[in-house]
Image 1 (cartoon, rainbow, N blue to C red):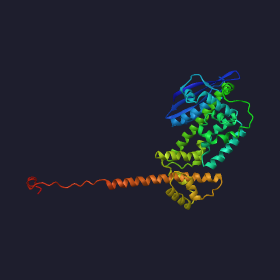
Image 2 (cartoon, rainbow, N blue to C red):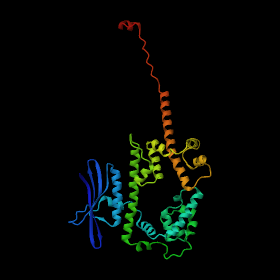
Image 3 (tube, rainbow, N blue to C red):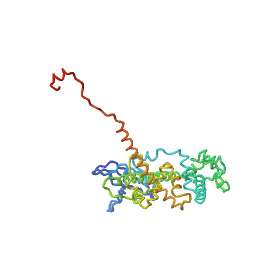
Image 4 (cartoon, one colour):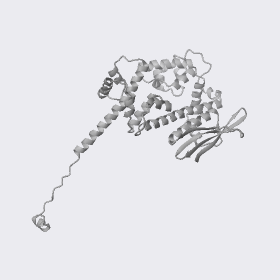
Length: 369
């Protein structure tokens, strides 16, 4: 066993200091990381908590970041400031902006946020756009917390650009301009009102969520690639979703991205769409050939008509179209490669070897006349 990294973490609780060790080690080709809570000397209880054990360094590092960020969010601090903590704190937005976001999440008006989200959902449907392109969840929380009542105040909120103000500003402040508020703009008062320890804990909690997503993506990526290995047992997307924490839609998007790097998922697609009828499969294939595979909505309408099922039913149809698009693109790539190969063979010049012409005297001299 080789200790690669070790650090001591401490937290003060009820005027007592509790300590733990965080560690990374390598043993027989396996990476292991975890947390070891220090206990009283006379206690025999095992407090060793293994966070990860496996051969994938990237997955181990992603899990380590997520778990350590959660401990920092609890209030643990390292005795030795290491490069990972510097990494956690790097790349943050301006402190003022971060505090506005923090305050909006800790003091959100959930009822108003739901109203704003419902408005966004209606606009997204009307404009055939993704909801986040109209306004992000973070932007709606900022609006619901700070209650801008003019377009100038709306512009002061981070993440709300001029395009959003011009296109949706009047509709957004219509939700807030008649609400009585106990604060004023500008919002420089937030930096002094927000508790420093509260802000630090929120910062690490935000990092924890980010690294949790990263760990899920790394794990899902590994499981998808393992499912393609020869002689491996088939693993459904549902099982990969359960083991990684990612949604099926996110897994399919990951498959589409990996396909661009040359990975093929025909076996997975075959299993996942086995309940789709042959007539539907043929119709979808024909639609991709006629319309193209860039946008899914025209293909959906061509195959299933203008009258679509409920939202959940439509989501299932989109999932099937995405999976079948992966297979369609893979087959198109194979056909293109075969055409290129045949063209190269047909255009390759043939080398014809003909005997050289020699004089009769040369032939006689060698006895080959």
